[in-house]
Image 1 (cartoon, rainbow, N blue to C red):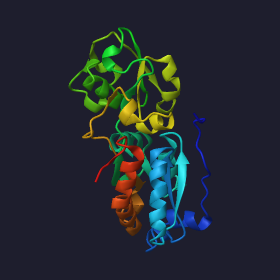
Image 2: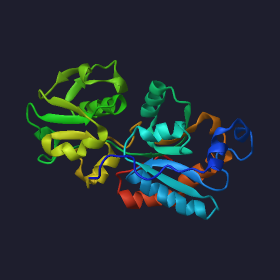
Image 3: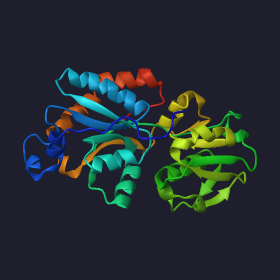
Image 4: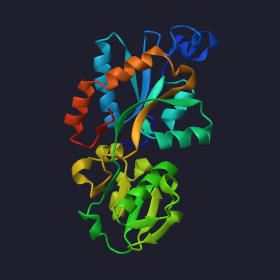
Length: 273
């Protein structure tokens, strides 16, 4: 797997920066999009692939979009807040809310996109019931994805959590560990590459796909289709009402994109509309 670094370049002209940043530009009718380029940040993998298709459709409507690809979950929001990109598409609402509160970022949700069911993966077993006592199980270390993974483990019958903690659960909230499992928290982007050292692990879909897995087929347990973890587009608050966002949402949530997602990802990525 490729090195986990921010990829691509973050280049904006002085005109673009002024359009996004100055009070004069914010009060103009141009807003977020100045008819030159809309820079959208996405994580590598499915979000990147879907955006490439969106870019094709947007060109037909004379909307120019540039994709800025990231390989972690931190920099897309930082780059958005610092006006290096115009919006991003990569995260669930629980993660977004926790991140922007922690960093005091003036960002808002724009529109829902797709869902990536988190799955449990293993190299040597084909069912969670085959995991032995004391098995080493990996999960993401960031609070939002950690809580999500623990809820997945509970649904799979591996543990029982404090019913009061919900999506905010941590390993300390495990009330019953049915197999004396050892839970190891790792960076989300690193888990797939360390799976050989684990008996199983909860892996986000984009990282699982990048590692060569087909989530709908290779996961030994996967979130149900009604999972609340829908991904969405995020934008700076000052730009939340920009007209271009409505146009972009219509393109992203079109029948063409829905068909592309269904054919390309075989149930591993689910549309939200």
